[in-house]
Image (cartoon, rainbow over all chains, first blue to last red; front, side, top):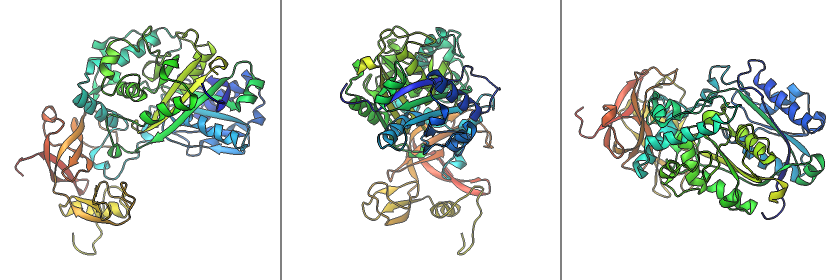
Length: 382
Length: 138
């Protein structure tokens, strides 16, 4: 890699269970935050930066700070969908570099499953020009991406199903995964059609989820804990909010953020040991593989068919089982980060990638119309 | 509709949104043209997203286009009172702009690049554009 890391991550924590019913979303966030701080004996009262996004709280940093009893001097509730927390890392780095704060907490909490799956619907603000037609948010947008990809490139339902099957193959090896029964392509293809060509098993899980990260400058991180994970590069971009505004149904802003984050890190795709990409739907993974450059545009279908993203394949991807089979609390970015950090720390609950020193975390928002990508690494990656 | 009357709509419409939906009540599919770059614009904007000009004119679209992409929705949103399945589509008009709509045709006959033309149908007390296969008798 080249240059100084952007940020050091000194602690990461996620809710131990996926269906709590024990705590509110704010309670889950607060619990994860306290667990993260405790893990490095960092005094909660010294957290002076707070970053959060939420599908349930309009002012999530205010809600969380009040719940925790802290008074941050830097507050950022940037919301660009499920990738927000990945963008927050970049914002925290800038804030710390500018001396707006010294130690920041990035947090997310969701009781989406306990609440009956209402969160994503709360994001389904439509344009007036869309309301008369009843698009089911967000699946309608992803379905239309998949339909167009099939038309342009000959991608098949079987190839999309392979992505769900690969995710499940990782989850089967992860005792913490919600969906742990082996899955076949035939089972995906016989699940109920929701929004063609996407079927129920092309869709992510709906679970509760929460996570928290404690971040500071790279130099201070090395003083505060033994083995910080560093943010080596990060990027964010978006091109549309609404399905009607999607400029290109077969490509996404990941084509911008992937190369930009890698470029800032001074790394190539072949230097990355593990990938975590946001799998709200099978088509999300397919588009990410292409836009990040793991295969050429249009070749995602044959690429996954060759088994590259299954355990033992050439691209260790969504090693927990991902949103399709591990957990998905409505905004998956935090869950992706926590798994990447676990892989880099050698503490993955599922298959641990050996000698894992670099990770690429790629998040999306909207109908894959927003993207944030971060390249993480251990001290050995530096 | 008659001069000065204020139509009511089943959802909130403001400013440029109201002009569009009042056009629908008159059976006109209104889009915009940028007077600076000559590009067409949909949905209606205050600023041209191609050249950032504020000099935009309303024009009536010809009403023909092709299916750019689509999905057959088997599970309508809870708040949407409509028989399922229905064909939700992005239509690319001849003017080069895209809009969300329905295609009124058997779902298994709808395909990308299908040539379609606009019809106005009642929706919640107002009128909205949908598309039918080109040449379908009214």
